[in-house]
Length: 414
Image (cartoon, rainbow, N blue to C red; front, side):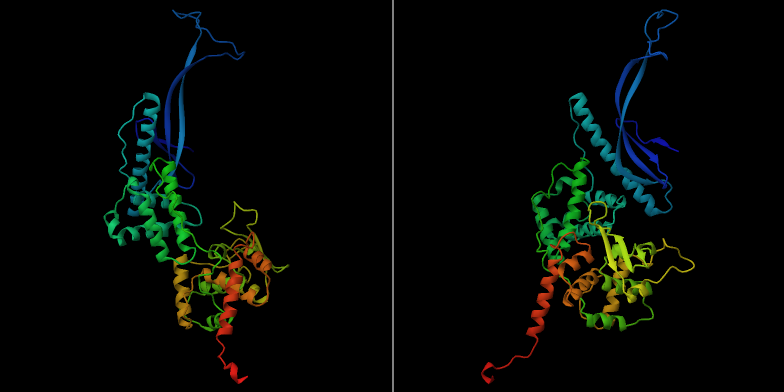
């Protein structure tokens, strides 16, 4: 059932439509005037007035012309707590700002004049509303992008005055250059580049919806050598030490999943979504589509052979489960990461290990054990060898370090 409710009396009007999932989708409805069209009978002939002063003249009906535009913004139809009500309030405020912009554009095109621009949107609030309505798998990186931008404003004396409120037009290229440098000072390797890409995505969205006029990020890029592995990896000896380290308080599901990633090379976003339907027990294979490339790559599917240890780690559905049940029941990424860090520290391993380090460790260790680069690329789900080559360079560096670790000798004694 579709429910329409007017939120304003202007042109365009801001309206909402109730969705099946309990949200209300916000959209604009433009009134573009009216036109007359002849009334026709079943034979297609024009109907004439039969009596009165109009007798014998053609009948016309008035047709009102309207157009709809989705804003991709959503309200919670029945908010249950102050946070949800606050989110609704902010989303509605943003939608009204966009409606005002659209009205201004309509007046310019139809009436030939332009109202004074009202750009009182707080870009930080706009960014948060964007996140509230974001449904893709990389939402955590988008959240990090907003937090890093807030940190940058707060930590940079020149921009500290914008730490709680900054208008879209106050973002400029000099600020973006400084923000890019700040990101590189905070993150290793591709981290800064990934965060800046999400930030630019929000800026692009704001431009497309007329919240911003110019793109302050134009020409600002973060370049990294993606052929260098900057994150720490666990050696096979360290992995065995980690497995041997137990803590009664440790979440057993996190432990199982991390060990599985160390021996199968999966990303966190993939291992948390694995179900028993992904396991071909008879052929001892794991088959799944990578969340990172699903929908925009022909090479998103991955097939990984399973040995006895991996099959035992996976297990089979219990009486309370079925084939669609998750293999690993994991909490949030943040909780999983904290658990892994505590585990690594308890094992006495002095390395900065994130969940993604399990994937890197898998690649480096199987290359060290003689696997060729094409095999590793296939197991990791890489479409080419470009992203896999950094692991061969990491292996070469490990070999060099191993040779350099040998005690020196005096050549004159030989």
